[in-house]
Figure 1 (spheres, rainbow, N blue to C red):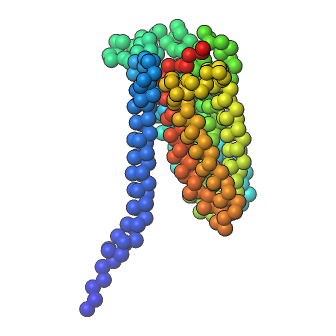
Figure 2: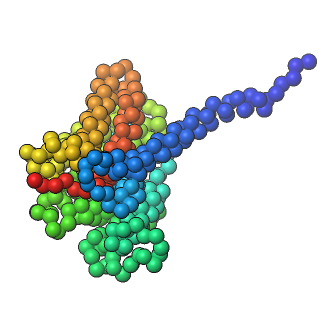
Figure 3: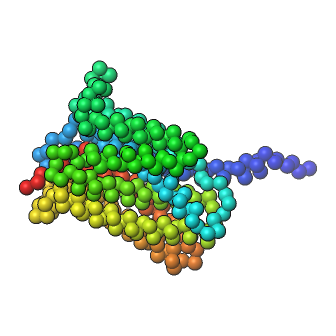
Amino acid sequence: MTLIRPTAEVGDASGPARRPAAGRAVAVLVLVALAALIPLLGPSAALRGTGEAAAPGAGGVALLRTVLFAAVCVCAGELFAARLARRVPGAPPVDPPRSWTLFATLAGSVAALGLASVVATGNLVPHHLADIDVGGLYRTREGALALLEVNAFVVAGLCALSRRPARQVWPLAAVVVAEALRAHPQTEHSPLTGSGLTLIHLVCAALWAGGLLHVLRLLRAWRTSEAGAALLGRYARVAAVLLAAITASGVCSTLRRMPPGTVLDQLTTTAYGRILLAKVLLVAGVAVLALCARLRLRREADPLSACVPARAEVVALGVVVAVSALLTAVPLPIRW
């Protein structure tokens, strides 16, 4: 007599389906934990030997700003990828992946609230609730911008729950504008020019990083070569323009911070310069990965093999976001 054990067969069939998902979740958690070490440990490492003093709580501020930047990337990228997908001919009629916007806006709200509490204590780390002067936020430009970011993320989350989630583009734009204005105080020479360059840089970076993340999520849901290749091709063409704009705005911003004759020296002797140099090298690596993905998309028999370097590109872009946030927590370079 043969004993049949159907439960084992069911377990064997369901096991492999669950393991990859669990493995991806663990990998994401590990990558997030490693990325958090960049803003936490980065200020002390970059400042070592420069003679510059770190601001109080620089690591915590950099971490909060990393979360804020990442939230903008996730929200803006989801809208961008959905717009690209609607224009792909023959897109499969499948449900899109689960939206991450609500979680991103919640994380962004918490990060913005934490940054506002730092501003409310005179850019010091609050140790007690009594240290926070909420009313003082309304009396300073930096405080008003911090409050604007908190409220904008809340509104973006409400828009994500509404019947027209695309409206969240306006509160997201408010967050980016507030960041651009915050990065260039009125005491700076031609602050509006600097804010304009930062605005272009942030918008293009958010669309590049967040857009690629959600394009890859859509490709996994579609599971078709023709429509998937078309979507990835549309993104690649826009990404080339975004990279050009990021490069141009970044170079102009660097020359405003560091006069041409001092750039090479300050890249190694100041914390800001060291982090900027690391960011430039990372972006160069990301550009190489993007080029590899584009070549695979054009020349390989299976165009979706381009997803392999594209996934590595997403991870590298996440590191770039963390390093960019780290730049906001170290002293600005000295104009000699």
